[in-house]
Amino acid sequence: MRYKPMGFKTMGLINILRRAKLYLVEIPARMRLLRGIRQLLELPDELLRDEETLMKIIREIGLCYDDRDVYGDESPYMNASGNGLYQLPKQLVKAMIELSRHKIDSFLEVGTYTGYTSSLLTAYLYRFNPELKATTIDPNHNFRSYKKVRSLIPLEHRLCKSETLRGQVFDCVFIDGDHSYQGARRDFENVGKQARICMFHDINDEMVGFENVPRLWKELSESGSSTETHSFLECTPGKQVMGIGILIS
Image (cartoon, rainbow, N blue to C red; front, side, top):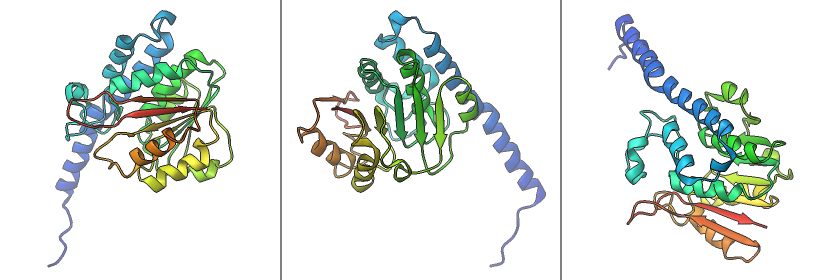
């Protein structure tokens, strides 16, 4: 069967649809992210650890669209595209408040994706640590809002894997990249093990697979090598979704 190229009319329609998606869906989502960052930067000190206030900001930024019912009651706060926080608000807020109790001048996120989580965490930690230098890394570039985000907060985006930073020491590392057991273990050995605070995403996620990040989390949290261990697992009853774990040495 011979290939029949698309006609000019079809190509024109596709371009119109792409532009419509950009202006009606993606750009508004990016604007919500920037607004959320500004809200955190301007938030009164007494509200920086208020769970409801922080959850309101997260919900207004919006969650990354996912039709697998991962968010439960938080589903109404999904954005209409892949732009958004791929987080359960209550889990993330509790983890943020725990991090706020520690001095963090250097922060690294492994696994940028669209940059929403790294932007939120950097803005929040910046309020407590004015000397903060934050870095987020990923081999792929999907952080479309980076230039505008970078004008607001001290966040550097690098296109690389954790091997590139092997041997560098950060106060806090958030591992949320390769979710296989081997991949998460590699990121931990490269940059997480040396950090005073190491945080993992998806430590209790049935869709990731319990033989992957959850297995690594279980091994590390039960090894006795950390002085403190925190896990935030709040999700829809009957489900095991996402989960954030923090190891403090």
